[in-house]
Picture 1 (cartoon, helix red, strand yellow):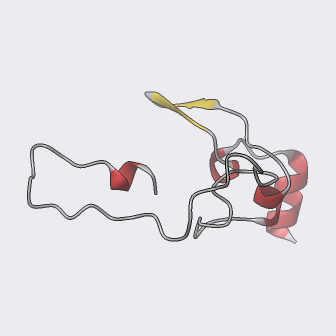
Picture 2 (picture 1 turned 180 degrees about the horizontal axis):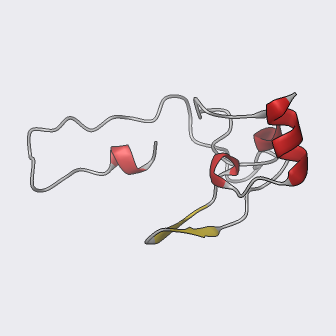
Length: 79
């Protein structure tokens, strides 16, 4: 979502895709992930827990969607 908002200098004609909604209030920060109210992939956990910053391939990501699955997650998926 955020990476899509970065302009690509190699392709000047590409439209920048804005992130819908309003940015979080920095004085009164929301609980959980700062983007949960604007994220199309937000899950229940996003509203209550700040995601950890994890290494993924050649970079880092702070998103519950990309966190390693716990045993509890695996059980919930197969339920």
